[in-house]
Length: 309
Length: 281
Image 1 (spheres, rainbow over the protein chains, first blue to last red):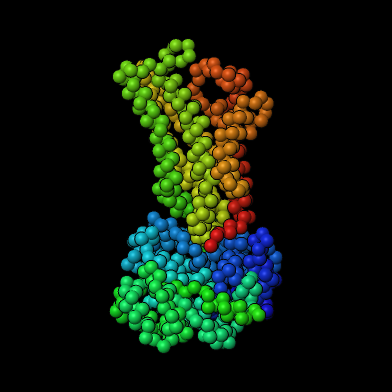
Image 2: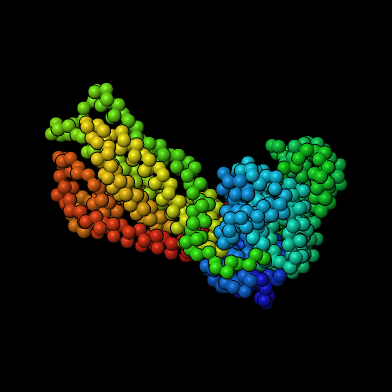
């Protein structure tokens, strides 16, 4: 792997958790713009994200972010916004209170922080819910408020760990557009996911990670073909799950369909077409609200198994 | 990008903002509700004693059959309930959880990825702990004072300086215990168990042992600040305690408590700065 000048550079970086390897001798340079970090769960994506956000210290090697070392360098967080994977909040605070409190930690005064927080909530379409307690937010709203706290202070580098997980199709489309616009405005984004389709909709610059190693980097079109050979599983929770399932049943790309509690789990051979159709259904409101869309990473696991053979 | 402020937030300014953020969380936590019930215990006890004396159904006597005054009874309650139980319990339960709670809730990430030193997080949360525990303990003590002191002719007005001294002593205890248990929480695994062993095993145990070991306890210095004369304790442990009952002066005690607090907080801050917090996914 190459190591040139980039917004993030890693030089022979390894991270162990006791006997377990989280990241194994990674050397890379992440260029400016939007970069997708793609890998199945447990591949080392979160370890990489935690290392580049200074939450963990490399066991070996060096990491720089925006040209500076990140570990024990809090001043760098003026320039970085981080959206973590975990669904964790101060549940009793409202979205606006929470964001304002976090922006204040950047040294912004009360009024300025409240304004920046309100602007960030507007960007993620949460203005109407700004005064509502986070504990009462839906899964998609929680994802969006988490995204808002990362971009509220207008950082030059956004680091997003699985930011679209659990968002409904419309929020997902808006979040993707927001991230793309962020990249177009000359800022950089590193976004992780286990769903190629999500990453592809934001960037073609991909880092493939598995078992703690970077397998490939750059514009990886072949991976796309491999992914398409494996069925893609989507879990959907909606008001009218059965009606939605009936609608999908007639589609040629739908390989299988089953119900789990209030949700339907669909396997499709063409994720692009599937997601486009799902977004259209969500926008039409024909099937009530679509609350949650997630994808297990079984299909990606199969591709990675093939890749590392 | 929003330019970094010309004057980056200092540790103190950052700590105050963390304090703002965490005080509400701490005050309305389940832990506070539970500990408020604990702190309410002495008030209920005091109310029961007062009611009993009013109804003349209960006479409180010391071992030598001499009737105990309200001020002495109040002093005993401060000593036995607050100094020996409530203050250490509050210190252990809040102090060891200052950072651990954020780690368990996985919200620590939001604080550690902001442009503030990590030690500001610890200090800010320590200030929240102090405010929270003082808000829990001091009203309880004042309520006990007004319920107990008038018993058997005690004067609330004349004894008021004693109340102030007690409040100061308890605040000093909360300050010192909080810092010590913040250190335990920041440095050690299973901090709650270790904290409880320290508070209810090491501290009372070592106080009975002659020699210098007792100087390694908070309780030793806290005892010197207790303004009350205790009634003569004729039990074996009481006699043993009184045999070695040589307490340092108030100034020395305050100086040692301050030194303990500052060094414990400094060491805890170092631990928080250096430690990697691996959150379970």
